[in-house]
Image 1 (cartoon, one colour):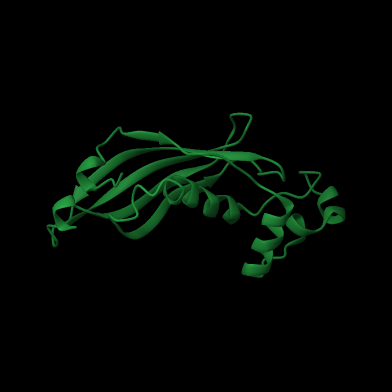
Image 2: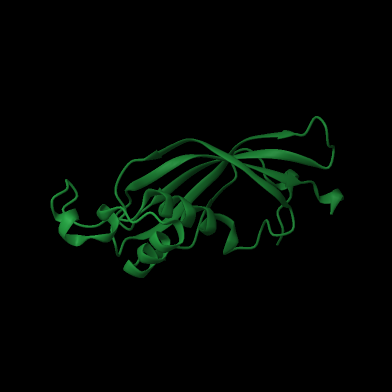
Length: 151
């Protein structure tokens, strides 16, 4: 079911499906981005850090959060125009290899476009949560969404 701008009312909330972060995910992310920082890629190096072991890249967690929010449900496939940005994003706990993450998110603000009557901006408060209930990342994401009559 497609969700349109008018469906996304303040207070509406969701919990995403979950996904386990693997060593292969971290290796692929390092390869794609060129970010081979040893905290993520070298167990020997990571043993000497406060974490005591390798952890996933923070941006890997953010990327998976975005995918878990909508890509696995398809609810915005027809209505999203653009991902506008993130704000106040915080990395509050490490993501360990083997952690299973899900995303709790809710509409916190919305405003119709003043220049295009067929769309509006929707802001989501996002919490990335691990299998222990720890919020590992959180912040706000803004998206430009079509109104249904525009489809």
